[in-house]
Length: 190
Length: 190
DNA sequence: CCAGCCATCTTTGCGCCGTCAACTTCTTTC
DNA sequence: GAAAGAAGTTGACGGCGCAAAGATGGCTGG
Image (tube, rainbow over all chains, first blue to last red; front, side, top):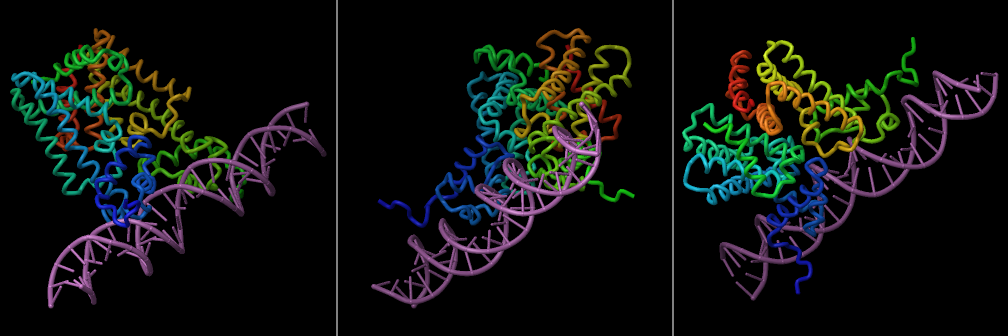
């Protein structure tokens, strides 16, 4: 019955979980390190040892976010057929999925000034995400310029969907929504 | 020799200017109302009377931002020819121009949770921006679905360019850069 | 087995921040 | 020309990020 052991045991993971919850509720702007600590049931200075400061925590969260971001794309790809173009389109749907499901994390990753862009783990995770996309485009017969085109289209759709600016699609039933998005994504295909 | 008159005279405008400078330097995350007041040379509580709170100030700034955003697009359109499709493509370049020239304002407008989305002036300014885009797409022979496609492409390019993720284009000389962007935007044309 | 080391967490303190309330100064209006 | 109200200031409050120093307890070498 260790009610409140002095040592948490797995505080790092608990803080990351609390941080994402905090991020989802308060957004990057309202993010508070002390609030995260309260969520995890520890003192307000406890995060320091694991992450240094707010930037450190958010950077670690962003690195994890990139992995989940790629996973969302992969999940869609695996549900698609074997045709490379279809898989790339599915990947685009996964891109949008992630943005809509975890908007605060999406924003943190792509537009926050509160993360350390030079962090090794973050750079690595971000590069992996880019390589995943570039690989998909290449498999679909795309060349260098096609990467930017498909990326921009998928990213634009994701960002607008996430911020509720394409309500016309958001209100559709899932399969129709996906079909509408694919019809647009297809324009950016190689 | 009114060294420091008690009444500023045009504090509202001065605060808006200081706020954009603050935004550009500190970003939405690091934005500080007190710092804005210091920039304008007034007491820390002076903004209250004009904008209420931080959200009020940022919301007013965002509304102005939307107008500048449309202006950036219009400037490009007027430099383009008379052909509707070319004008729409030029508008897309203006979209990207604005994002790159005033990234913090772009972020404030599109992805900040720190503005009052229900503000009348903001909604009006945002609607005007949307209608401008929709009008351009319609003039180019586009239908309902084409709006989302072109918007997403322009927005995605703008967001990625702004955050330095398309360095391949950013490093190009202006005309080549524009040509590369137009080549991509063209895919989203009706 | 136990002594000490070290990672982990808490407490305390500092300055900055946003917001509010009360006050002062100026302008406008009747 | 005085009252009324608009425009700024001052002071206070709690919350925040961060740093330093203390408390706790797991772990390792003897």
